[in-house]
Each structure stands twice: as structure tokens, then as C-alpha cells.
Image (cartoon, rainbow, N blue to C red):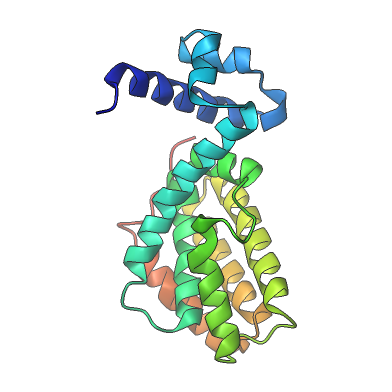
Length: 212
């Protein structure tokens, strides 16, 4: 059974790191600052994390697991890899607008972006399926992965800072369309897919821009 006090200390550290990393680059935040904000001793940090980088990775992994769980649920009955990718993009976008602090940390310090990380398995599988079925037409699977991972990261950062929900919705549509076009989907089909994904994942009920 886990120790409740230990869990509270770990969570306090994670909450402090989230707040600090949202404002500053990871390498600009000292461990002393993290423990001071968390209200715990410096020794407590090393009882839970090996280094500042391992700590940042733990924060991002928690965020990514939350998003990936939503994507798995949304795509459970979706077979088309293009629609799966479009929905995943919209869910990342929606998360960025609802949870801007987490999105800023994820966008600036996503240390899980290597392709063999387990949290990337779903997106990698969708790209590989699309390539195998000739739905996606890019020079290589590697190029498709690099484009999509890098582009979604930049989209997340942009949306986390945007306060205008109508503009955010348009940005989502245009960027999702662009991503699909760059994967080889014809523009008319890409627009249709992006609109359908936006409608299902960015409905007024789900689309909530946080107050900054």
C-alpha cells in the first residue's frame, strides 16, 4: 500500500514544478525553487526523482497520459487513420485551450517526443497504417512522424496563449487541414475531415477556453 504522506509530497512537488515550468524553461528552474514552492525539504525531491530532467519528464508523462486516454476513447470505433489523426489533433488542441498551464509545460518540455516512447504508440501506429494503406503519401514514415509531432507541439503552444475562442477554433481547423494535406490528403478531403473532427471534439460543450 502506498504511503499517503509520500504521495502528498510527490504531488506537491509535481504541482510546484508545473507552475514553475509554465513560466520558465526547465533548465532555468533550480531544484531549490521547486522544493521551496512545494513547501518541502530539498532531500524530499531526491526521494522521488533522480534529477530535474527526470522530474520534468514525470510531469509531462502525466499530462500526456491524460490526453492519450481521451484519444483512445474518442477513436475506439474509428478505423480510418486519417480521421484518427484528425481527432487526435483536435483533442490535443482542446486540451491546450482548457489546460493552458499544462499545455505550456508540455509544449516547452515534452521529453517524451522520441518515437519509441510508449505514449507515442497510438500516433505512430496511425501514421504507419495510413502509409501502409496509401492514405498518407509522404516520402517516408519518419518524415510524417517528424512533421506531425513537431507541428502539433507548436499548435499546442499557440493555443495555450490564445484567449479568443473563435480564433482558436479557426486555427484548429486550418492547422488540422494543413497537417492532413502535408500527409498527402487532398485539400477538399482534408477540410472535410478537419471539420468533422472539430465538430465532434470541439463542440461548444467540450470547447472551453480557460481564463488567463
